[in-house]
Image 1 (cartoon, rainbow, N blue to C red):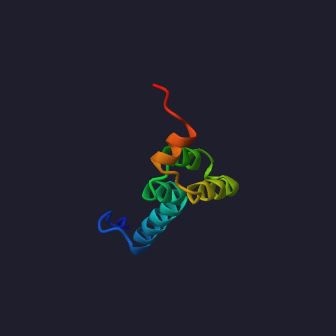
Image 2 (cartoon, rainbow, N blue to C red):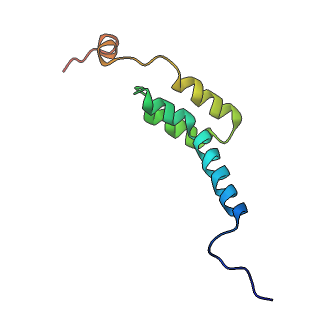
Amino acid sequence: MKPPPLWPPPPEAWLGLVVLLIAALIYLLPGIIAFRRHHHNAVAILVFDLLLGWTFLGWVLALVWALTEVRRREDRQRIEPDFL
């Protein structure tokens, strides 16, 4: 019996790929939101999400952090003055 051809892949393979892409987008959602909102801690949120997002609690914390108020540059300078 001849094995099935590798191309085109069966429909189940496409479904698996789509599910994998959707899961990756959901997993990275806190980082995506942080970068889209120009959050001042966007890189930290993304790293936190990559390292602890596999736990549901880590993912929720990253999402909440991404949705916190974005401080503008003027506000940060008022809180953290530049003495140089």
